[in-house]
Image 1: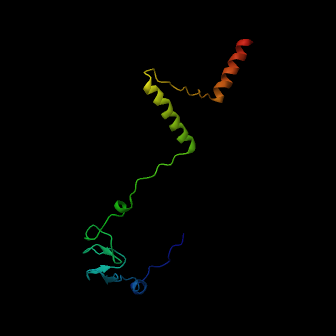
Image 2: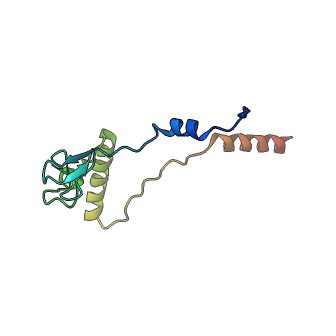
Image 3: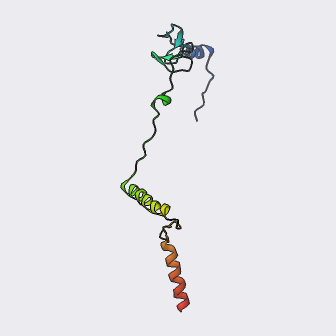
Length: 127
């Protein structure tokens, strides 16, 4: 790693630091109330930004989520609609007759890996 041979003198150090200075922040006036505001920030006095109410401080503020919230529409596919109709048809006669409700049995789901294990155990018992 490079190491300087000699110390930097006070004069050279001062010349180097001469351009390292702070600048004043850009201050503009609020279009709504006229208060001084930092550029690209919401007015702390009235809550407006670019002529629009964006803060709770402003009296005209309305939450964006409250206006645009609508009830989501439920999408049903043809298969689901048929199942719903079948269940309605099945439940109506059952209500008229005081018989036990009919339960539809779902086919049992099996894994391929369990079948392979069963086949291997059968082969071992046959031998």
